[in-house]
Image 1 (cartoon, rainbow, N blue to C red):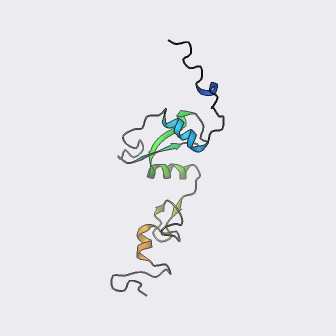
Image 2 (image 1 turned 45 degrees about the horizontal axis):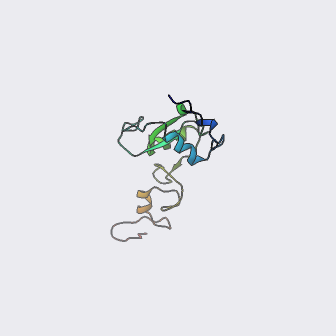
Image 3 (image 1 turned 90 degrees about the horizontal axis):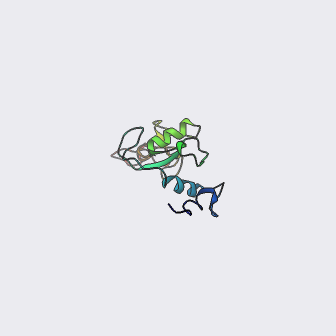
Length: 127
């Protein structure tokens, strides 16, 4: 074994920071935690995101997990993050405004126009 092995690793490295940026800590954790094939919470085969359980973004690997977007949103809501719900059907949505706006999910936004009138198959804007 080389006597130089590990001499510049971790806090001994000149580029080490005690307060790393959001992307830096995510990259650091990604390089140390293997990504599972399925979401560990719902067991569905979806694209997975890195999630920190306490949202302090520390270097403690026990606090990090891979989750699908749905489980990640549920987990964030449970620790006090704001969750948004559609004004019409009360379905959880990922953001309050944006493409659909006015706090509606995609399906409700398609069925109601900008002025709040229901759309129907005969008259697009209905009354």
